[in-house]
Length: 309
Image (cartoon, rainbow, N blue to C red; front, side, top):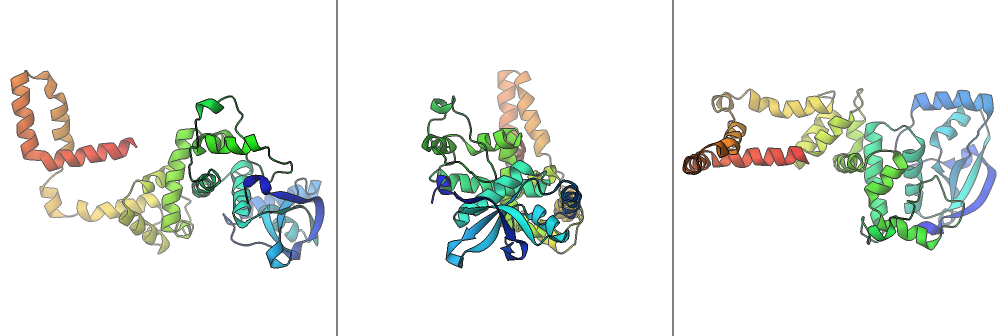
């Protein structure tokens, strides 16, 4: 089933709240958001209906697509039923609808934003036939990037579907979220690393991770990412930053390491500025430095290359 096959069953209707199943949500309920919504709904009513899915292979069971905070708010207000729109869609489409609503409608915390973008990129690649960039982007510059929405009430024309695959995911996400394409790419990289390490490990801390911490985490080696996630999950450290620092601590306290200071950056800078010397002197100096500090130079180049990405 493709993106254009999401079908609206009922534009507006009421459903029993107890009959709606809420499961496997992309992010947990935020208590502050629920309390704010309760106040708004008590004063003005539910202005934006929730979205539900009618699952045929589960005997027509009703499953929440979008609006978990609204649903929880009206539940606490004592409502028996809630206004909703009902859709017929696949499991993959249901996940995409939930993520799109979060990205477009919500002020997400950095952790939720990074993981949502990472999951959304994977969905985009699948919908584009395995290619996240698609075809010739230049030939489609005049076309408008299709906006993400909670669900599509109107049929999607074929050329609109094709446009989804020809634009890069970063361009589409940037147009929908207001972020820069570069920032989208960095968050996607961080989100993938977090999902692999287990997002639940990052939710146990009382201090929500910052964007800079998530990006720093994504640049660690696979083993270091596992170590950081474990330290957070066990409560050994309160933040990603402190976890990363703890990985370096044993080396900092090692007397042998202190007796052999890292001179790689200094050597690399010396090589870089050797151009000021005469050709013959420069050649001799560089040859001697490379012979003496080859491993240090390689290490410094690797660190600088990683820092620039």
